[in-house]
Image 1 (tube, helix red, strand yellow):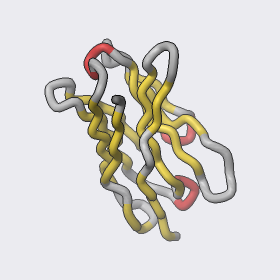
Image 2 (spheres, helix red, strand yellow):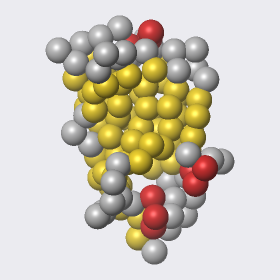
Image 3 (cartoon, one colour):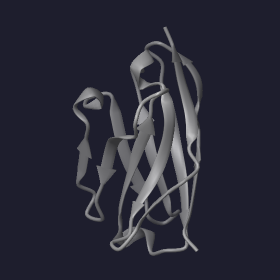
Image 4 (cartoon, rainbow, N blue to C red):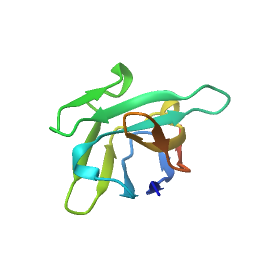
Length: 115
């Protein structure tokens, strides 16, 4: 079955950096678009970034220039390198797999940015 396990979250100061990882299994990772979504406290889920099978990427405007999404198809892993973090980046970050008929999401990892 599809499994997505996020790691790398934590508490970081304003302006700091974190790298999130997502270990994927149960599907052909290299052939699928992947992404990161987040849920700020008390708010709805929002898309952060996506990376297609051909490594083309997209970012929400507020993270452009600060976040970088990447993937290692040999390891079946997805990454999100976050720099210059701001308090508004605080939230639970989820790895997402776009598998056509159904999308899957992991259990998430909490990122807290202190001001």
